[in-house]
Image 1 (cartoon, rainbow, N blue to C red):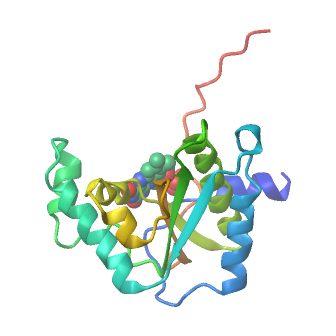
Image 2 (tube, protein in one colour; image 1 turned 135 degrees about the vertical axis):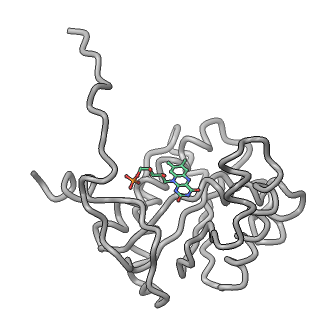
Length: 184
Ligand SMILES: Cc1cc2nc3c(=O)[nH]c(=O)nc-3n(C[C@H](O)[C@H](O)[C@H](O)COP(=O)(O)O)c2cc1C
């Protein structure tokens, strides 16, 4: 198997991080992988907000859990109400990927950028996990602006990065291979 395929298969969501910060050159390589993602008519509508200030990361945890605690879906509400649950897993770097509101395929383009960055992180043996939960906090009026998302941009996706505290077994969780229809 070639290196790219190996990295794609070895990436796992990491939920335990070492407190030390990742190196700036590693961060830049990861962001560059995002910049190289495909985008509709090459619009490159993304903006990457890199947060390495612990207080701001904690704030994102707090506001997200506050909203999560009010939703109807029980497992999300329970996660929001659990005082021991940190949605950011205390990772030292959090990245918000925002997309221009006036671009047609902005959200999909940003999604492509995130996946590129997760794969790039794994190639450097840096852990990552996509944080759907972190989007709840941006539902609060004014929070995106307060955190520093530029005007005209929508914060679509959030993920964290850090050195892995523990390695995942490559077989966990398993994948369903019964998802392909061939029409030949
Ligand atoms: C859109 C999206 C949102 C996610 N949100 C969260 C989240 O809020 N918290 C979390 O721990 N994992 C989250 N994940 C990670 C998934 O749980 C994980 O990718 C999935 O279980 C497969 O495991 P793997 O990433 O280790 O292969 C999210 C993944 C995606 C793609």
